Picture 1 (spheres, helix red, strand yellow):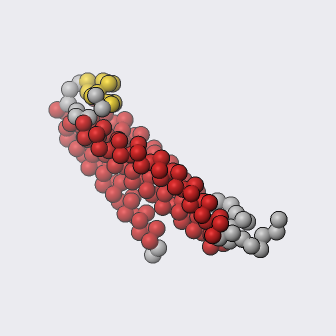
Picture 2: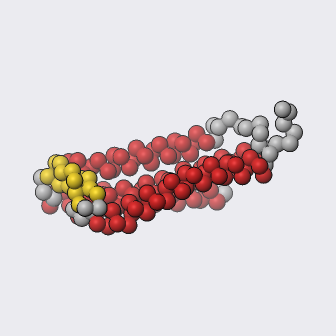
Picture 3: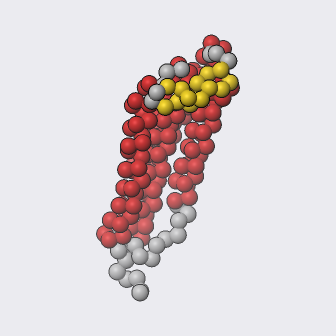
Length: 164
């Protein structure tokens, strides 16, 4: 089994555990929550209050994003092969896309687990101070590095037999 497949399985398992734990926690806490709870917040506290039924929103949003990243991962195998890159370079590029899709899936799961915990406990401090600021800082760096890897792979695995 390839390392990327192991990483993929670990990512999906951790993601499922985080969503399951937070869902069970939310359902167990549901009766104890006020009818109107804070569901959205910034570093200064909650800024949107709504019915506690809207506490399910982070689960839906996280599930949709997880699905989209995994769809992106699956579609990476369907990418058209670039004639500018050797076959090995094409495969390495696809592997890189799969790893990034799994990495973002894990980041999204951590983000929404933290958001769910903040909604359940009605305390936005941990999410805003540690998780949100960290993801805002590192997610763009990961996205930019994908393009850096693209340039590196095109140069390192350049197809010299390609006709111009």
